Structure formats: C-alpha cells, structure tokens
Length: 157
Image (spheres, rainbow, N blue to C red):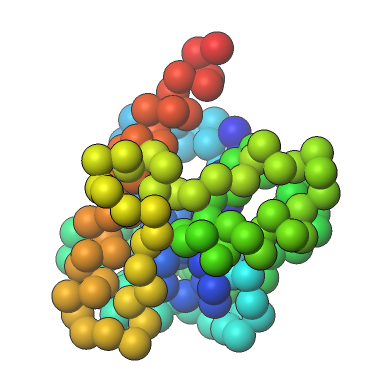
C-alpha cells in the first residue's frame, strides 16, 4: 500500500506525517508493505529538507525526518498512490481539481482518521511559535494511529 501526505510546501506538516506514520508502520512490522511519502501542492521549497522546527519537534518524540526533501505533487502520484491525504481542506480542493476522475476515491483529509480531534484541518505551524509545532504533532500522531488501523483493516480484506 502506498500513502502520500500533502501540505503546501512539503516542509512542515506533510513531512511530519510521513515520519510519524513510517515510524508507527515499522513498529507494527508493516515497513515492508507500506510505502510512505510526502509532497506539496506548491513548489516553494523543492529540494529543501524539512523545516528545522518541525524536524526538532519530531526528533524530541523519537521520529526522524532524515533524508526527506521537499517535492511537489505530480500527475503520476494520482496513479501511483493508494491514498493521498491532504493536511487541510484547501489542499484537498487543489488535489481534487488536479486529479483525474478515477483517482477521486483516493483523496481524503488526513484528520478523517482522527475523528476525536474535532478538527478537519491540521493547522500550518510555519508562522507561529513552538507550541504550534507541538499541536501539529499531537494531531498527526492521533491521525496516524487511526490511519494505521485503517491500513491493517484494508490489508486483511
């Protein structure tokens, strides 16, 4: 199963989701069967590593973003990935407008997998302080646990 996490520039939210979900999937023994990547809706930071604040916040909780570099969503992604998860409703609208009709069922909001969060969108922490990065990581951890349950269920069926 291939999963793509998407935010704006692919330096904060989506690389954090990639790192967290990869860590959880590997801990569950699914590392060889689940491929995880991230991308941005815009090419502002292509080739750059994740934002230092995101990487440091993740590292403090045991998640590594080592080796990640920002990239933009491509047309091939709609064919290659089984799930394409948007960090917010704006990203989802952009993905829906770019996706071919047969890929529409692959597109979801990431927080659909964290129904107890009471939120639709993972907020962008880029222009805020350290608390924003902690809050984003809390939401991503919750959604990643729900996504992991979803993946296990799909793999059984």
